[in-house]
Image (cartoon, rainbow, N blue to C red; front, side):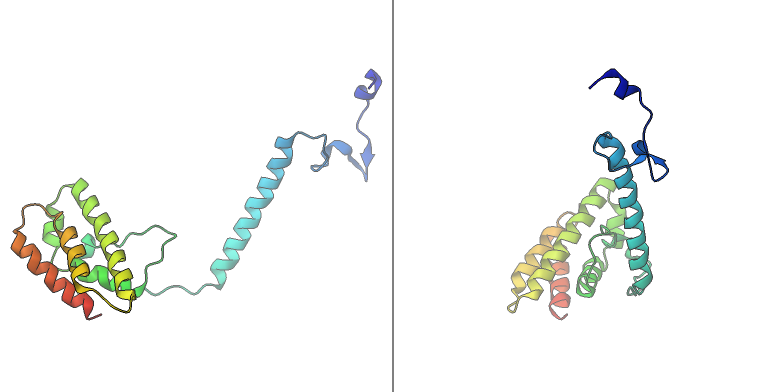
Length: 168
């Protein structure tokens, strides 16, 4: 390469400088990626808007006002089935007072464990042969997170909730 070729002005192709071509191999990779990233973002936004336009709004079953103890908040990628929602509603019944008396850390743990328990129970109910004692143990293990409650009351409450869930 001689020094004269570096000092040349860019040649024009179709009325635009050759350096403005984003796919020219001599151009730095960062400039090419920036352009493709912008195009990718724009394309994603268009696709998302198109999908949202064609989707029907999902109808959710009404949730009681006192169901703040329900594990209702889920990650956006996880859509709850109707059966799972009913299981969660059964699990949260009559536990509002106990839930609001807990410390915030324990509330988070209780909520997370309740969501796990509901998902486990839903998987058990999907099987052809439901083992009631497994559902009972899952509920009892979850209820034991509640501090200061009589263990006989917990067993009774777990039994009642198990019966209601099995009837689903």
